[in-house]
Amino acid sequence: MIFLKRQLPLVVTFCMGVVFAMQYYVPHPTSEALLKNASNWIIIIGGFALILGLVSLIQLHMHRIQRNVGGWGYSAVLFAAMFAMVIAGILAGGKNLDSERALTGYGWAYSYAMVPLQGTMFSLLAFFVASAAYRAFRARTKEAALLLIAALLVMWGRVPLGEYLWAFSGDIAQWILNVINSSVRRAILIGVSLGVIALSIKIIFGIERMYLGGKKE
Amino acid sequence: MPTDGIPIDVLIGAWVATGLTLFIYTFLYRDNPLFKLGEHLYVGISVGYSIVITIYAVGVKLLWVPMTEEGQWQLLIPSLLGLMISARFFPRIAWLSRISFAFVVGFGSGTIIPRLISSNVLSQLEDTIRPLATMTASGLTYTINFLDPKSDINNLITLIGVLSVLFYFFFSVEHRGAGQAVARTGIVFLMIAFGAAFGYTVMSRMSLLIGRFDDLIIFSGAEYGRPTFVLLVLTIGVLVYWAYREKQTPQTTAEEKS
Image (cartoon, rainbow over all chains, first blue to last red; front, side, top):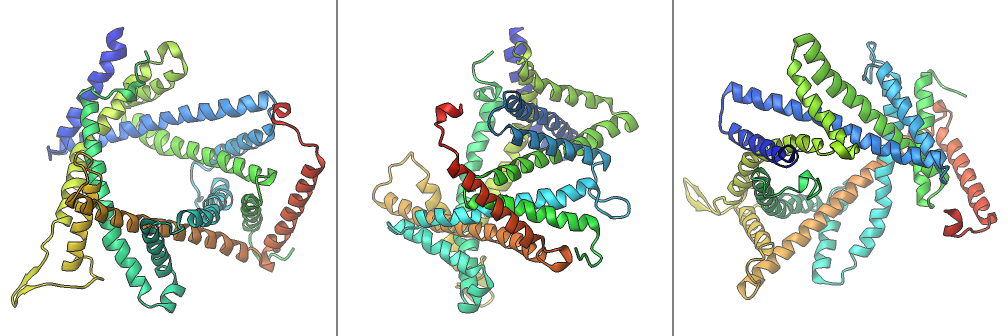
């Protein structure tokens, strides 16, 4: 039993890690098919992982409804919206448009409820970003001043009015994004990649085991 | 209500989209029941959408059809591994989920190592270490064209940026003397890049805001029955009534609420 609980997961990780690290260096149709099939298997496992999140969400909101916690009605609304969407989706066969290119009930809910809600939620950040910018951009140090100037130049250069008022602003914004920003992103990307590679090697060889739930049985 | 031939589903959609947009924007005043309603609707609809996508993109397309029509019964193995993740809800057999996680993490670790070395390390280094001057038929030339990311001057700036930022994050050597100057250069590059990233994010949020306002303007048309104006008045009315009720209700302490 100890083998099944402790050693088997490490053996599985090691075998999968070594096989698929080697797969990259074997340019053969069988090797490509192996990668494709394994990728599909991972997507299938990921699909089942949705159950974890779903059960947690249902537990939380059922608890609120059962105990009449303040605002339990919102949990009921959440369930109603979720089940309505699932039923509409199943009735539409998971398609947004029907055979006559008209919106299905599912497509309608997506276009007229989900998209506006999502867009509005994220656009709300525009207001809060403005107040955050005020706090972050007070040029107290030289570094903060650089941050402020770069942000202003990029914002200025990416609107038609900015380019109309100052013709070079678009070019300067583009230069900051293409040269300065990309060199920093490149350095961070190299550093992060080296870190991920080191971590992956530790995982494959069983040195890093936190993904198995720490020391718990 | 004048509809000018607008289909009824589009008309209802316009009213629903306008109402939900205004409900979410009420948060700019403060947290209130209309915002909470919109927020919970958003979570419910998003989760429902994800469930349907998963059922059809994974359950039907990758699992049911290949098994029943192509006889790929080996797909029962990933299904079993997927179900084993749910063992976490049962403490006695929770360890079963470790095997599923091991499968996924092992695959991810194995596939990512050669691909990261190739695309994120070697390719990025290759693009960084470029000739700092160009040899042409007429001899050695040096291009100073800031607008061309591949020009010699930009190659030099990129090289300085990458090396100085990498050095800034290299803590095994104390940043003193010449090292301090390099690290300071790295900070300058980082600050400009963070500022640019922030400005870029602000602009993307602004474009979303403009998109929502665009919809509100379109839906304020007479052909839709002016939902923007009608629902705006209703929303403000509800908010005023709610704020009035809040003032009238005696303040309860947190202990009493619980």
